[in-house]
Image (cartoon, rainbow, N blue to C red):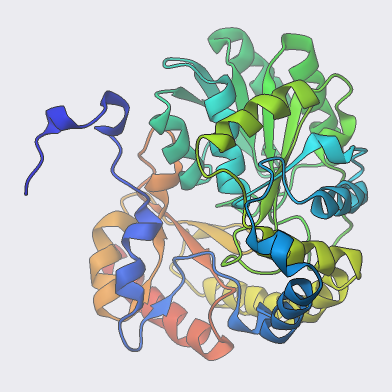
Length: 395
């Protein structure tokens, strides 16, 4: 059956879906080398520990775990997260923590709580395309904030606030998706001050902060928040398991309550068993050793991909992040990563065209590369194929 456009809600008519999710079926092809997703390495998925924690949780508290749970979340996990975020400089109460299905749902619930159709959201350009999709679902108008090699420029953010009077500002401050940039401490403090000065909610989306391969950890924007304008969105998808779908939203209690009500109407609660597994990872201090065990492999893959990029055609520019999962590439003018995507797939390698990450589109000479879910051999082979294809296209 074919549905006509008048069947669909107005806010959904222009939504086409995530460019990344749409290419997942291509990645199942035998021999396909994918730099397109953001999946953790298979080596980073600790099946044995997750299995043991799940069995132990069920043995000790099975009846409660298999029953309906509170929308507010598994109480022990809320306590563990409140303790966990202290490493980012955040002082939080368990009552300010809402466990959710990953930071994507955290953002969706925040948007549901504060955004009306036509409200303005400020976002980095480029930014996470899943966030852009969520914003458009709520009929928000997304305006760009100028950035440089260090990320968001606070002066540009203030100028954009004055010009557009936004309801919300969305920022990925640490190893940003798609660029891998990390916002310096003084800029983080400045963003928190702007939020308080102008009464703008800041959504600080920080799922990559623990994947640091060099340099020192940076405090969260939320750590400088004195009035509750900053909402911290966290996730365990990149450091434990994306399949468990556990993240969290940390906010002032009045705002958190509205997000909780929004979750009630969406899925009632995050699965108790998954929350219990994450709680034990944190409570037993299993997370840090696990993360430290996967960082050397990620560092090696990042360095290898950067080395491969150094021999790409003249005029190629790219970020060199200190952590995270992504490198953002800018090819010379006239290059079209979107047009070449199908040919790259035919050669057995995939990436994400950069245009999808820009609120206003354009920038067809850019692309995002992920290194975490490929072997060193696949990186060498796949980057060689891209180098050959891109060189031929540029003449």
